Length: 360
Image 1: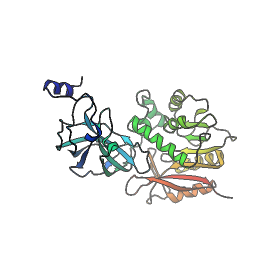
Image 2: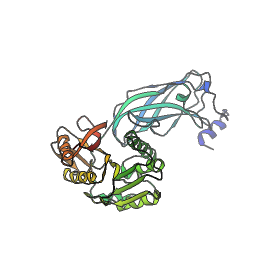
Image 3: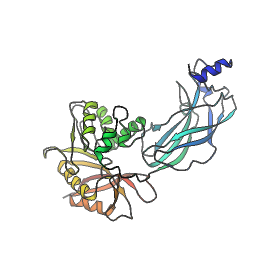
Image 4: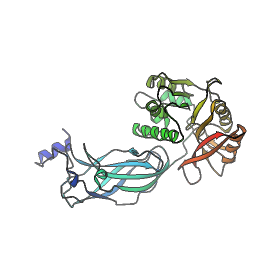
């Protein structure tokens, strides 16, 4: 029995044994103070006021207690968003009553122009928004901060305990954020015509952010090849994703261990060119051109800054000059156009590019 429920029983208060009816799921949430931008991974208190606009009291304890939840939603993200931890009411809230509450909110590890959505939830039941009560939605950018150089790539993987936490090594701050990012990446591919019979090359597969979604999407006609610099990452993926048409291999920094006969409908460089030097990016683009099907596409994200001519930064965050990158594409008879852009800061942008072959 939870301590809160035991305390209420000791006081002689009634703890509801059944869910509240839909008519009781009516409330209003307002900010007490404006919410400034978060930095990636920030933990911060957000003060809110909750008004019970129903004719029922809301319990703060028990199996069907009322809590407050929050979700981070990007403009281009999936409907489910990234859900944070729920906060119970401080005490039962009578019909017509108002209660102030502090939420402990953690920002995603991915910078973007997010909406912070806050809603009331009945444990074991529905969100109030699902029953017609309006949630609070606040525009809340999550700003990136340049990370320190992480040194050797294999050293970082050697320190990771993948059985306990397979997500933070590749960026997300939680398993829920990992799963949400997986769905975002799959949607990028399917929006560009990937079918269950498609052939996908995932360069820098890590622990399988894209792999996880494709394992549910591709059928037996499809093919997936994931490569990574880390042997530990590759072995983890081989154990986790065991479908016969899923392959994994260790690649070099500028070459991919795949023969010339292969042809992929989609080649993904997610969070690859954000770390490679311009020279390494040049050679990887050559490898991609070699393995791309005639009508295939390459998806890649980069950091661009108008203050950079060719490149700057370190292995943890490589910023390129956009014109220089476009020149590298042209060298390999490729062309690229942005299909979306995530938020980094006021100067550095992180577009997602769709890259295709130039017409002869």
